[in-house]
Image 1 (cartoon, rainbow, N blue to C red):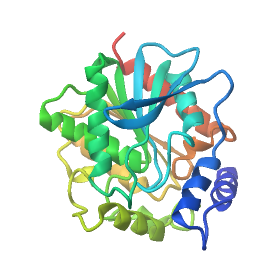
Image 2 (image 1 turned 135 degrees about the vertical axis):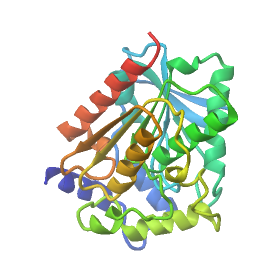
Image 3 (image 1 turned 90 degrees about the vertical axis):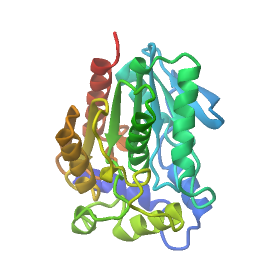
Image 4 (image 1 turned 30 degrees about the vertical axis):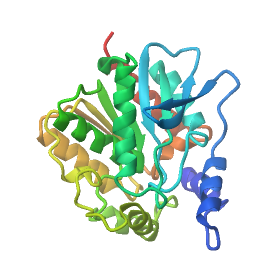
Amino acid sequence: MRVNAIATAAYGSWHGDGVDLAGMRQGFDRMLPPPGPDVVVNDVVVGGVPGRQIEVAESGPTTVLYLHGGGFMLGSSVGYADLGARIARAARARVLLLDYSLAPERPFPAAYDDVLGAYHALLDRGVEPDRLALAGDSAGGGLALAALIGLRDAGDPLPACGVLLSPFADLTLSGDTIELFAGADPVSSPEAAEQMVTGYLAGADPHDVRASPLFGDLTGLPPLLVQVGTSDILLADAVRVAERARGAGVSVDLEVAYEMVHVYQLFAHQLTEAQEAIDALGRFVQRRVAK
């Protein structure tokens, strides 16, 4: 499969024995291409949390608050700038890539608190919730879902929609595809997932809904788009999130891409299926935000 070769080459360039956390963070960011010359990137601070705002010629009044992946320990707005630009173009939006707190330096629930703080700050700045989408991939997808639950519980205005790409929504690691697809997904492994959960939780209860939103009450959440691949070790997380949300009366679009690996959308610069998924994401956001 071409996607496996692409992902193996990308992750294998920096991920391996003897690479410390700083090296892994640098490698993860360098693995992905920079945005094109037509992309406007500005450093921002929102609610005390740094990040980057991405705008393209197609950007309109819609804002996408995007939470990067990386197992709660890796990832940044620098490495995700190309994906942010592609989402901005597809959704006709500005994209805010949030540099939430990373473990182990700042473990759970610091990242969750950062997301809520940034969301509230956007509302305080005049961003209308019905022109706002909350999105994320992997760990960021789990954070996005947890934040939606927290916002609903607090009675805060909810965004127009949520977008979850390969969401890491169950930190008890009970999803069967983590083991079943260990050899099929070159992006992650059961061992890596366990290490990241341990570093992030730092002894906290993995059943806490802020950490594992799969176990939360999903009633009353905004429409959700869930994208995942059939070779993704977190396929079970994504499917269970979609099933539980639908059971709670939430409108859910579940898109399962044949033979795609964990967060395959990151490889849109090389993979047609990845760009097609981003285009579908953009159409979903455009349908759901206020006109």
